[in-house]
Amino acid sequence: MPWPASCPCWKDDDRVPDWIAGGATDMRRGMNTLALTVQQGLGRDPHAGEIFCFRGRKGDLVKLLWHDGVGVSLYPKRLEAGKFIWPSRGAGDALKYKKTNV
Image (tube, rainbow, N blue to C red; front, top):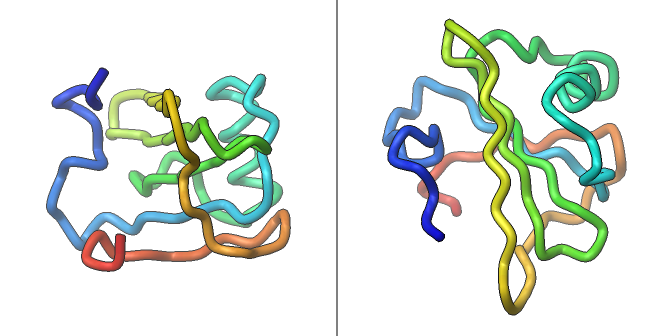
């Protein structure tokens, strides 16, 4: 299943910062707990319109957290085969990236 058309990952806008959360994230977490992780663990504002990407321990699932100015959206994506390539960073670290690097 492809990403929804409203998903922020398809927006080609470099004004919106994108962040990759380092380490493995417990994928049982929902949008409220991930927003708390952004605020307390990464030191960012989860309601500022930035996109935050989290990857599970097995590497086959990612979740994108994004606040569009009206509400928070959570977009999960699971791979049938293979794993998402992830930068090696410690838990609590965040890596800012540009779509041209992905």
